[in-house]
Every structure is written in structure tokens, then in C-alpha cells.
Length: 481
Image 1 (tube, rainbow, N blue to C red):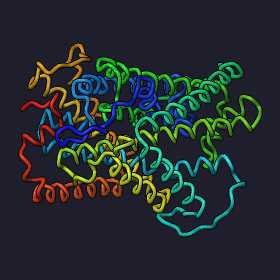
Image 2 (image 1 turned 180 degrees about the horizontal axis):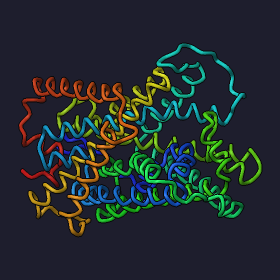
Image 3 (image 1 turned 90 degrees about the vertical axis):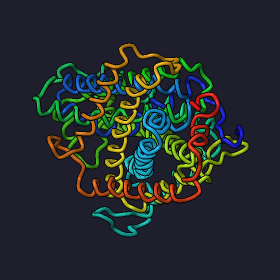
Image 4 (image 1 turned 180 degrees about the vertical axis):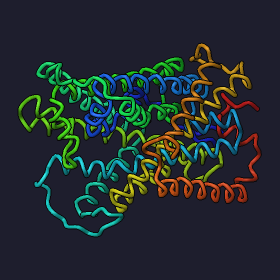
């Protein structure tokens, strides 16, 4: 930890491979092992791949705005910092609150996801601790709570011990996941049949269904700005790493689609997709190699994706909370940094408590949080893209170690992409809009934020001069006045 004139600062301990593993591992997660089969079924093998190419291109437009702003303002908080610089305190508070919803919502889901994965892996072997209660139509069992809560405690302790400890874990788990995924791709290509890839296209509706699922699969590259203050790499390389991570994620999804389509005949694949007790990609791996043990291996690899995503979103959520507290937007306790580990301990513990308690809500309720979190993410994307455009005009002389060519055009396209992503959650044309209860969660989160904002403004933090907030947000190196 370092402290500069009362301003808490985080340790620079992350190298290039740490940053790449953080972004890539956070993006990939668990979804691909469950959904790749349905992507092929909906859009056809080539149609699904084209959907992810399109999704990758859209994400790159947004990613380029992050890529320029992050090394220009390499401070914990990311979206919070960019929007403060461009649009001031109120817009920054709103942006920080929405991205916190995004990160905490997904982090809260990872414990139940781990419980489900272990249930698939050790089907019939785990001890039966009984059904404790039923909530929103789903049974909450003792084993479900045990796995979810213990996993959350372990991940909290890992992050409490500092960015480097979580980075080592992130890199190890990401490599393990990549090995499993590449093995699946190779087995699918070498043992499969090109005829299995039929149909290569389905119809327009199927293609659109895959396109609508794509944006959520790229959420995660945005954790890089949250950890920017802890990176020990040349600033000019931060933007490049961000774009590389998006390209890597798109490549990953495409090779998973190829492996899934080639390894398994259509009728067999569809039987896996339609079986609620199936893990489609794992089943395809077992089918390709003719032994169910390979399905278990695939689940283990995908479980590493759960852990990398979980770790990344804890990093993201805790850094936003830390940055808001440091700038007097939240109680000062959350700006405390551990003297040995250099981690924002109170912020991490807060996120840890939420993720430890979240399995108590059962599977159905947590699905609502994930969907609400996705909406929070695209709102933050819009605010960052808009901040990018504003700062091009407002601060043309701001030093930008990574400069995007055609900045205005890229910024406009990024704003358009963010608005398109947001529209996917509206009941206009989307086949999967947010449910009323999910809109209720988004609205409830905003109401809580408004209450906290008012309390903060009415308290002693509301009397802090703007010059002090500017210094606390940006430090001596990046403050404007």
C-alpha cells in the first residue's frame, strides 16, 4: 500500500500475462460449455460463427474507447473515472453504481454455478444434505449452499491477500481451461465429420437469436480498467492487451462452435441441448472420444472458467467500490488499503459477504440478478463511449499513450453498439427481454443508489471541495486543478 497526502493508492503488481489472463478468463466463464450446442442449433454452424464474428467486431468498437481511456487515466474505478472526467460528479456516481451492479450481480451467480458444475461432475456421489427450503420454484439444498458459500469464502480470502495472489490463481485457472478447450477442439476436428456441420445456416430468426446472445459472452474485458492502477506494464500496452483479449475471446467461442458442430451428429447434439441434465459441450467431448470420462474432464476445465470469471468480477466490483469511497462518494471505510497485501480490504469483504449470502436466494433468483447485471454493464458501456467522445473535444491535449485512429467515428459507432446492446433487454423486438422482476431489480438498485447519493451529499462528504475530490479521484499526476 502507498498513501500520498492522505490519498490511498494500490500496489503496482500485475504484469502483462496477469492482465491478459484477467480479461480473457473473466470473459469466458461457464456459459460456453452449456450454450455452444444451442448456438449451433439456432444459427447453424457457420451462422453461429458469423454471429460471434459480428459480436466480436461490435465489442471491439466499445473496447477501443476503453483502450484509449484506460492508459490515459490508469486509475482504479475505470468507468467511474472516465465519466467523472467527461461529465462530472453526478454522471460518474451513476456510472459507478451501475457497473457495481454488473460486477456484483455476476459474482453472486458464480457460487451457484460452481455448485451446479460439481453436481454434474459428481452426479450421485455427493452426500445428500437434504432440501432446506424452496424459493421461487427451485429447491435449495444443503449441498448447494455448502458449495456456494464455501467457494465464496475461499475466493474472498484469495482476493483479500492482494492482486498478485489473485492474478497467479487467475493465470493458472485460465491456462487449465484453455488446455481443456483446445483438446476438445482438436478432438472434434480430428475425429468428427464435416457432414456433422450441416446445416451451416438455418434462417434469419435463428441467426438473430445467436446474435442476441453474443454481447453477454464478451462482458469482462472491462475489468482491465478497474485494475489499471495495479498494472506494472507500459501504459501504451494496456490498450493493446484489451483488444487482444476481445479477439482471443471471439476466437475461443468460434473454435468451441467448430468443435461442437464437427464432433457430434445433429440429432445427437440436439438431444444433449434439450436434456436439462446435460452439459452439451462435455457430452460432445465424451461422444467424440468414445468415453464418458472425457466429459468429466471437460467439466473440470469449464469449472476453471467459473473460477476465473468469479475472481475477475470480485476484482472489478471491489475496485469500483474502493474508487468511489476514495473520491468521497461512499463511506471512507471502503477506501482502506491493507498495509501488507495492498488490497482494498473493506471493499473486498463487502463483495465477499454478498457473494457468500447469495446462494441463499436459490437458482431462480440468481438468474434474475445476472440478467439485471448484464443491463448494468451495457449502460456503463454507453457512458464510457459517450465519455470518450466528450473527452476528444473537451481535452484534445490529454496525453493518450494508446491513440485510436478515427476517434470520432469509432466513438459514434461505440455509442451505437452500446445502445443496440441495451435495446436487447427491452421488450421491443428482443425474444429475451428483461422480465418484470428483473426490471424491478434494476429499478430497486437505482433507488438504493439515489438514497445513498442523497445521504452522501447531506453528510460530511457533501461538504468536500471539488478540488479535493478531483485530487482524490485522479491524484497529483492526472488532476486538472
